[in-house]
Image 1 (cartoon, rainbow, N blue to C red):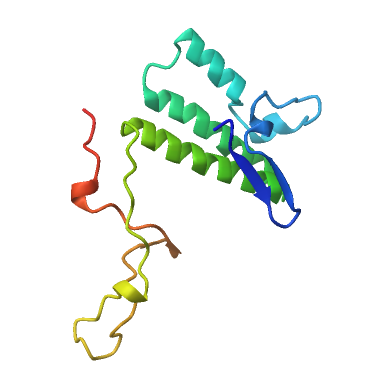
Image 2 (spheres, rainbow, N blue to C red; image 1 turned 180 degrees about the vertical axis):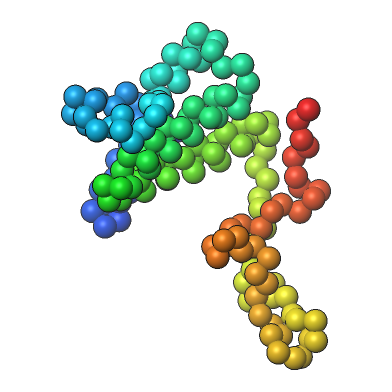
Length: 159
């Protein structure tokens, strides 16, 4: 995560992805931060909690890191600071990928891709209305999401 970079294509800026998340938000500069964010979190605090043994489970650690990026979105979205919102989403995505790989022991499980012309699902009537349309099974709330892994690729649930 520390070596990840983010490029804002509209501003043509490339920066260290975690730069703005390393230290606590300076409430002297961003006085209204506490109005938007209930529980501030940053990578320095996460490091301190790791060193002190505060995390009882990997999920506790995951929660705090995810909180950093959620706080970024909560504070910056209403202000239309899309650069910071996109930076937070980008860095959160990198973290989720790295964390998932680590939890699986370093192996990478590839998810099937979204439906394309190569994997169309024909309608029940095969030649009738709707034949050849892309399946909408991966839609949730009107938004597409990646299909779930096939059952044999799913990691076993922890007990």
